[in-house]
Amino acid sequence: MQANPAVPDLGLHDIILPPAPSSWPPSLLALLIALVIVILIVVGVVFFIQYRTKRKVKRAAIAQLMQLKATQASITELSALLKQAALHYYPREQVASLHGAAWLDYLSKSSQQKANFSDVKSRWLAAFYQRSVMANDADFTLAKNWLIHALPANHTTLKVTSSKGSPAHV
Image (cartoon, rainbow, N blue to C red; front, side, top):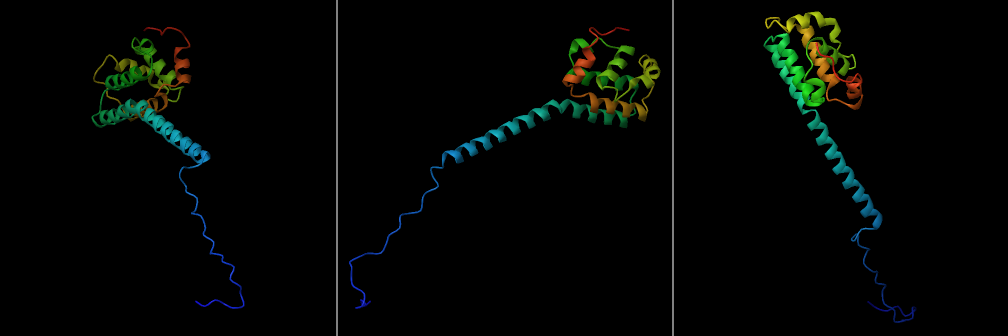
């Protein structure tokens, strides 16, 4: 290349730019945001695992209820399933000794009357002492409503069921 005679040679060289700034190490703000995201993910996973674990027995009880419905089970078997589920979620000293009318009242209270057993109380009480009384579709629906609404026990249902002190025995 020929030098232009009109432009004087000053002895300057082309400007060399420095390399672009690196993204590593990240800024303090980027590290803080990444840490918050990781903590939120871990907390979310822990809560999800607790949620699934807490409701595992409830899902199993509903599945067993569907099996009982398919085999036309008796009311005694249906009540035994409800008692197993209640014993898992509610304090044993509240549930284990209940039977008869007290048990049906407890079922109604623990579901906050969303599964009202007072309508079928006389039929169920008679069925507890007769193995041959088969549960009908309304009984299975009532049991499923109780499993859905009363399980797992939360603070409200625990207060409602334990508000009267010791359970009444029949």
